[in-house]
Image 1: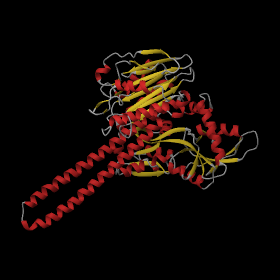
Image 2: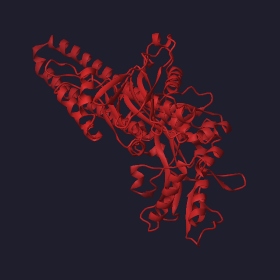
Image 3: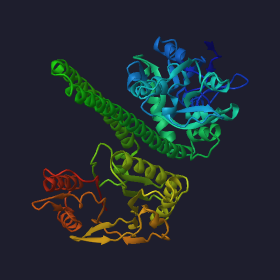
Image 4: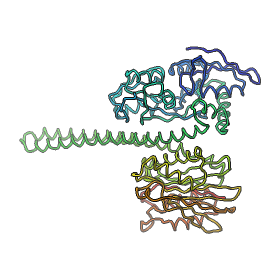
Length: 581
C-alpha cells in the first residue's frame, strides 16, 4: 500500500485530515505516468474539499480487495469509486447521492466469437476479486451458479490484470466495468460483448460508524446535488475531460444504461427460457422412456407385478422431485423479473421532480404482470421553462413490454437532452427513427404515445400523439384532441407509410385538466355482461370527477376499474395521467 504526499487544500479554517483510499479504475480514479492522481472522483473530491476546508491524504492501493479491507479496518476514512449494494451497506456507510451509474461487461479477445452468457460455460473468465459485478447478489458468480454454468473463474487483483489475461490467451473472457473496458480496449487486443451485468450506482464509502461520517456524507451529498443540477459545474467538466465527451455525457450514459439493462433483461429471459425448455425436454424424454418400460414389464410375467409396482412408486417420487425442481426454476425466473421491475421503476421519472413542476397531477399505473409495457416520461427544459410529459403504451406485456418501455424511455431522454428537440411532433418523428434503427423494419414491436409540452407562462399547450389521444376537461365537459393514426414502430406496413405527426396548439385556461391514457383502462372486460369498459364510459367518468382533488381522482379511477373488473383477470397494463392547470 503506497501512501502519497498529503494534499493540503486551503479552506476557511484548518481542517481535519481524511485518508482517501483509491485504486486503478480509469477514468474514475487512476495514477498517471508521472505518479499524479487523476480522474472524475479526484476532481469532485478536491472541489468539495476546497469548499469545506478539508485536508486529504490519498492512499493508493492497486488491489480493490485490499482497499475494501483497509476501509473496513479503519486504515482509511473513505473510498472512491465503489458500487453501492444492500450487502455492502451492512459493512460501510455510503453517500446518498451517486456519482455515476456503471455496469459490468464481459470483454473477449478480438478474434473471439463469444457473444452470449451461455457461451461462457466451460470457459476461463478473469475477474477482479471483491468486484461487485463478480461477487454481488446479481453478479456473474451467482448467475453462473443459478443457471449451472460451468465457468472457471480466474481471480486477480485489478482490472488491468483482467485485460492482460485476455491479451495473453490465459483467459477466454474477462469481466470489468463498461467505463474501464471502453477506456482501455484500444490498448489491448480486446472487444466488448452483449453480455452485461448488475447496473449499480457508484458512490463514496466510509468506515462503518465513524463519528465524522455524518458531516462528510452531508457535505458530499449537498455539493454533489448542486453540481448535478449545474451543467457548467466541475461534475460535468470532469466528465467532459476524462470521458472525452460534451457535458451531455450523463444523458448519453443514461441512454446506454437503458439499452444495456434492456439487453440484460432480454439475455436473462433467454437464459431462463433456454434452461426451462432443456429441463422440460429432458424430463419428458425420461418419462416417455420409463412409461415404455412400464408397458413392456406389464406385458411380462405376473410374478414381477409387485416389483414393477415398487418401481412405479419410485418413479412417481422422482416425478414429484422433478416438479419441485421446475418450481424452483420458476421462482428464480419470477425473482429475476421482480429485479427487472426494480430496474424499470428506477428509470421512471421521480415523483418529487414531477410534483415540483406539475404540482397538481396524478399517475395511476397498474401493470398486468410484474413489469409493465406502459410508461410515463417527464422532462423539464431549463432554457425555456417548458415541462414535457408523455404517456406510452408499448407492444406486449411483461418482460417484452418492459424491454420496449426502457428502449422508449432511453430514446426520449436522448432526443431531449442530446438532440435538444422539445416540440412534441419533432420528438415523435425522432423517436420513430430511433425505434426504426434499433429494431429494423421487420419488427412488429412499437408503441402508442401521447406527448404534451406545457408553457404555463404563456398558458399554452402543444400536443402530438402517435395513435394516442388527449382529453381536455373544461367547464364540465371533456373534449378529445385526436392524435395521428400512425404508431411508433409497428408492423412493416406502417414503415412503408410516410409518417408526419400532427401537432396541436391549445390555449390553456385556469382550471383546465389534461388527461392522457393507455388503452388498458377502457379495454378492460367486466361488468354484468363481461364487456369492455369503453372509451365513452371513461370520458363520462373523467367528466364526473375532474373537479375533485387529483389524488381523489386517482382513487376513484382505481376503484372504478376494480369494481368493473370484478373477478375477471386484468387484460392489459393500465396507465392514466392527469394534470390540472
